[in-house]
Image (cartoon, rainbow, N blue to C red):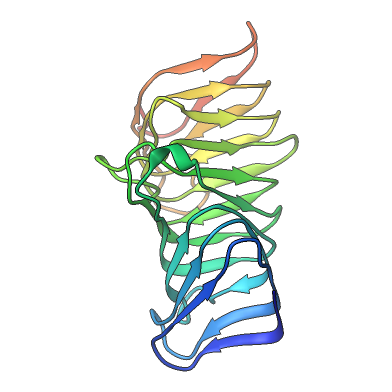
Length: 219
């Protein structure tokens, strides 16, 4: 395990954390924007903020396992790095914490995002040929807001509770209401008004549950 007040990348470098080991720190920072790589080789809990949005983001966070975080995350890229889609690696975001990064995967239909409460995600999630496997968001009373495009496979975006998932970029994939939640398209509170194209099917696990709210010129 690693325990420190602060871990800082003074220059470009990599910190590799072995499987089953945790990181306990106030923050993992970098002296220059876009430098430093955090390589997580297994199941971990990372306590504290990772990078600082707006100028001191890490270059890369590489995930090869199930990773639970407790702080905000800022990086150029978060990558589900396994080349075996069956590994089903995941990243769990704590309630009230935000992600500023492009979230990518090395293998199509690989990688799961879990949100334990309200969060914002700034950056695209997945890509047209390399989609994430699953996103779980919208627990009871929470709102998760995506400001970039989102790509998932048929395993879908799950609205898990009575909360809200706001999509302000285009969405590619399917979605399911696991509970009586809401998907809001183009509900960006900042001008100009948002416009979201939803490309996929929307289903519900229980008849009569789930709300689709369409704002502005979204389709």
